[in-house]
Image (tube, rainbow, N blue to C red; front, top):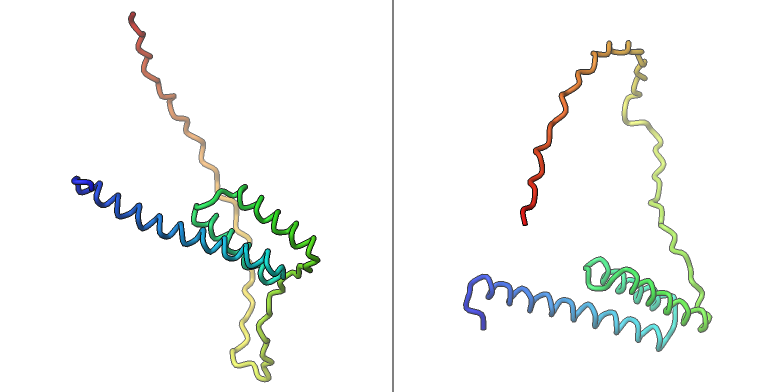
Length: 136
């Protein structure tokens, strides 16, 4: 066991992170096995979601996840799974019979005159110190 206080803290952090990472990896494996066992659009979506979570957490690299998702799509295609695009549900629009707010008067835009430009003041260039010569 570490004796130094910072090393003790670091050891605690690594054990926490390891537990979290193992859990996420286990979720990925479970979701992938569920998809392979019974290919459907829902199980494919769940597996992809777990993989995307791993990328977001920094557990897996982006290209690794892209490769795994590609393999899942190949399995889905061979199994004949139809991929459906999710459509966002629009909130129901309530019909308003009476306008409750007063009509707002439109503001008239007033053209502004361009501001007179001030002459640009140039700063003196900053001199860099001479580089030291290396002696042998």
